[in-house]
Image 1 (cartoon, rainbow, N blue to C red):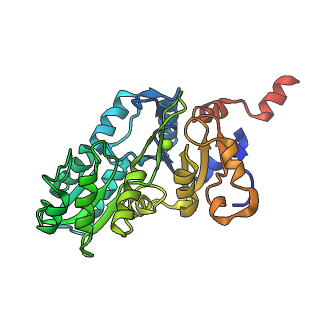
Image 2: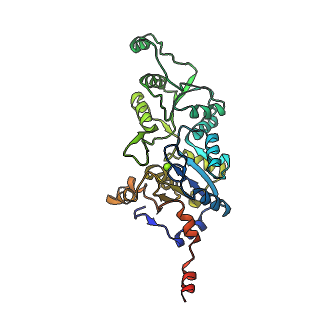
Image 3: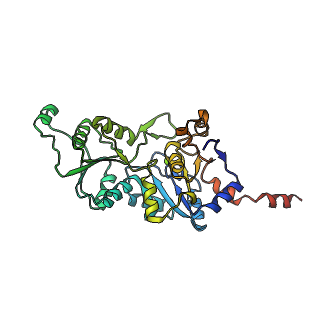
Length: 322
Ligand SMILES: [Mg+2]
């Protein structure tokens, strides 16, 4: 990838749709947005249905670390997306499925939201750590006396977004990770949530993951994009082939990087995090790492897919003109 992203036109969309059988849609910034994530991007649900009616296998893939697959399913139904439950892959779901597949039999210390713990419990993995953690009394004495309240059953630390994140949690997570046998898993490494309409952003899960990583000196296994874990699951369960797959996302360093790393077709929509200027800037200097984040095409919004599909083709326009 060494060229500028292209604006998609009707011909390139038709060509692309003839090549692919699978579509991966990021959620926030592509299908919906807003503080509660309940503002539907206009016509996004119609695009979803149209792609399904064309026989495409459509999946939703999200790095959101706080929600379960079930809660996403309910949200999708509310917003008019006729998605099947097992076609929703969120980072907590991937993390839980990973532990199920490796036949993990111990407990997980969760630095994360209740949704992450619920996803683990669904696959029969017990958890501890959700909510405010407090080590009583002097932390120095607790450490010296071995009374940090560590659970000997814990065999993994899982980190996602956690509103209750505090110093005592860092101490406990770090102490578990002092055992090299203890797994270190993270939902995602996104560092910001953009709050539309303000100049502020919220620090996201990646900031907490970085903290535990620094404190423990360990490197986590990441489950969300741009890590390839989501793709491995899609490949194993649904035989998804990257050259026949399109990913549509709003974030260059997660969605588009993931798509390019897998060898998929990539489309950036400009309704979320990343801008066209940022995408173009990545091509300057020919840095191969940056070029992996450059999309093949861009669209203002996912709704443009319908506009392009419904546009009369050039031949018809010419015929009508005569
Ligand atoms: Mg997004």
